Image (tube, rainbow, N blue to C red; front, side):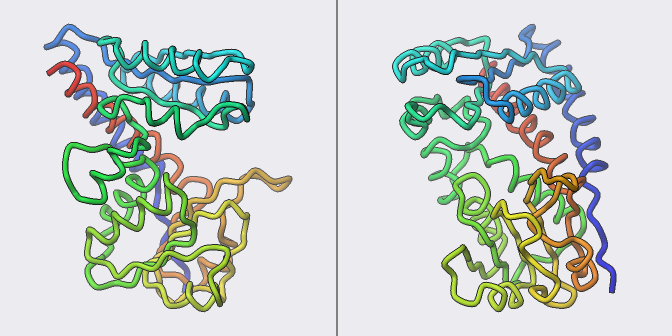
Length: 284
């Protein structure tokens, strides 16, 4: 058996092409340019690299990218003041707070101050609660939203399937579990302290892995024919690696997202989809 690899690059292009037309039409009718503000504190290289990737995505769909970079020594109050300005600025439709933040900045407190209507990352507690309760409007974190879109486009059947998510982060694991639950999967969330993690993984019809440990999941963790979603993105001496040993897993799974080229490209496209919704809210 050789797994069918889900092409995130192709889907991302399809989504972005559609969004570009929608942004252009709304900008023409409203006279207001769609704008995403990205708030970054300090000079972390990974955050700066991610900001550049978002800027390229914005340019590709006709969105104005506004970088707001504060010195790494900026106080909590200074960062919150900058966020407050973005919250109240009607020309800003979406806001992202990039991590990692300096150690003296309380990220949870900062997120609490974020305007939920501009929270295109879906990290504000109000949006998380709305997702849990299935009460619109809300923004879904882009990474799990993109994964669901990939699976839906591939014709994956959700109803009644056992889905296992390895990883319990607020931006991937937990929202992915909710999205699968809403689609009538039976959901198990596993993590580093789960007893017999390989055995739990082998019970999955749909296995989602978001643990940040390159190639941890091996071929013998996989139920034959399972759908595997690999969220991992770790740079190693051998290049970008996912959380799954791709060749081993692909030999057993029926379908999987590759790394690179799977969930990653769709994430930024779904971020722009969230921004489109925020833009519509902002221009009324």
